[in-house]
Image 1 (cartoon, rainbow, N blue to C red):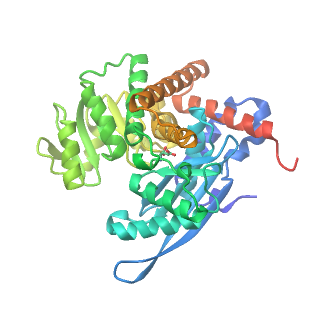
Image 2: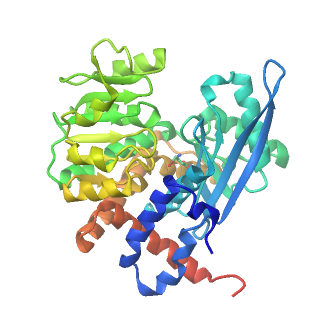
Image 3: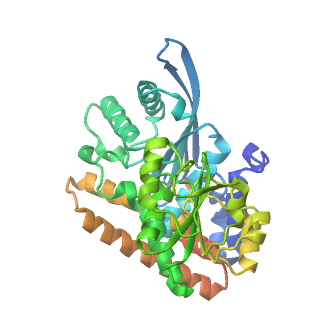
Amino acid sequence: MSLSYEIENNGAWQTYLAQVDRVAPYLEADLIPYINTLKRPKRALIVDVPIVMDDGAIQHFEGYRVQHNLSRGPGKGGIRYHPDVELNEVMALSAWMTIKTAVLNLPYGGAKGGIRVDPKKLSARELERLTRRFTSEISPIIGPQNDIPAPDVGTNADIMGWMMDTYSSIKGHTVTGVVTGKPVHLGGSLGRVRATGRGVFVTGLEVAKKINLSIENSRVAVQGFGNVGSEAAYLFNKANAKVVCAQDHTGTIFNDDGLDVKSLQEHVAQTGGVAGFPDSSKIEDAEFWNVEMDILVPAALEGQITAERAQTLKAKLVLEGANGPTYPDADDVLGQRNIIVVPDVLCNAGGVTVSYFEWVQDMSSYFWTEDEINARLDKLMIQAVDDVWKKAQEKSCTMRTAAYILACERILKARKERGIFPG
Ligand code: GLU
């Protein structure tokens, strides 16, 4: 029987299903009977979130929490506030979390949530009310041993603080481990905010070594200049790469000699976007894809690298800071053109890895230094790059397929060993 979402449309969930289909031929025969466990979410909750706006009117928002798979541990994954959030997208994002936690061998399943809202249009008080009501609506299925939310596009540490406080109020005691990415003085972890961008840089550096691409003077283009893109750009700049192009919702800017990323970060903090940065020229958004570059960092939203864009892309290396930026047919084109893609489920896993460290610190009420955190993060990510790279060599496949092989084996072995209840 088909489920409605299997025939729904050509959204991110269909991209994910195509990725699972690609890995199936590589899996051991005894795991194949369990593969459908990956092709449907375990649990999906849709909630109505009514709030009183500052002018006294009542507005309703639609929210979601999807637990895609819990075979290896509690659900884990962010909360997205964005006007395009819908069930198909949240399902895909939750599934990518299942794969991501398994690639890094973190003891979690995968989950994701979100609200269809433009957070920029709400006041701080409205945003707080929205977050608290949403947390209350999803509280039956979250918890430190059940499912642990975190920040994603449009959410941040303050929002995680409100979520933690609301959940704690419901439980009657402080439960720091219910969310990660919290403010540091509320049980958050040092290094968490910059962890995803750092992971993009660290994995990029490792793979660049393997393909003999020198970072010094290499040309980098970054799409998305939020938490992930700006930190990755900053670290590449610091390593003497030239960040020649940056694009966000306000426009696309270019400097052939490389942008000064630190100043650009200050400009974005002041003005809300990259547009109008003094030491750069403005180019058409479509031109972003034709810029002479060695490294592309898509760090915005899913569905950006189409087969058409992949045909002419100049990059040698693509570092997926965003979740799901590449369509499956574009993956084929990039593969044929020998352009290496470090897939999202590996490349941007720095965030969830430090989320895991945060959860461990909360559980033990013992906190580590930032140096300890970064050292542990680098170690886990470099190990995961090596594992994925070796698997890709062994199977003559892309790094994405290799990452999926490693992850799906771990997830399906766990499923098989646990058995199907009631048996
Ligand atoms: N939202 C981030 C991601 O897509 C982090 C998730 C987490 O820390 O749980 O990986």
